[in-house]
Length: 318
Image (cartoon, rainbow, N blue to C red; front, side, top):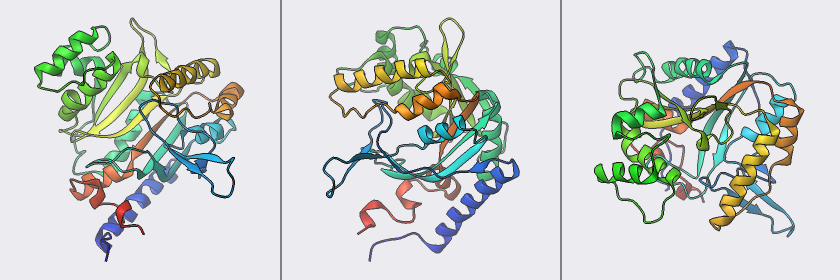
């Protein structure tokens, strides 16, 4: 018989979901439910979506969503106010100790918040869900400071060769062809990230501007993205932004992402025109974050493999 989660683990998951819903109910944040299947999906070259075809309609093509972000922003533009969503999302090519193709995500948006105020609320939520790991005050460190501290390299201005040298100094193998941004991602994953969040919650903020994705930009020389990630025990739990509200700039970024996907030979879903129309209509100033519920449950349960804390692994589903 295929292995399934114990009653104790199912109860722990149910309790965490109930705590999350109670947290937002007390703050007047509305739970919403958006479609898992849509005609388009993220264009981020670093994220692979699962495509859906219909055996009954050869013209149909859809995508299982990697995040409810696009749909939730349409709700925000329509006047929904503060909202959150708990549900399953899908990312192709992701498997490993901390990754699943299908996993549970908490995503929420707070109108009138900037990224710093959102960090405050995320710290409160994590203190509730992971009290054993989040007893102390949350730490905040800029992306630049983290790289300068751990790798002695400035990620905002130093050249690709400098970043590669930093990786070699830490005995990290470098594939032959990597862009500067890919080298930064590799350095973050192998050198910087493992050192974060061992004394509690750690927020890494002010990412390079070319890693803004759907985030607004901060003024400065050079400018940075109003983006942060949150870590506990060296594990990344979530990715948050002060949201970009400019439809023209968002279209420019989508176009650049599509061109990058085409150049890499990756599938190129259509641009989400409904999202761009919502931004043009008027997205309120807000900040949002996506958090991995299964990873939070891993920490709460003391598990080392994400497959051990889901109700059943994909290979067990017949």
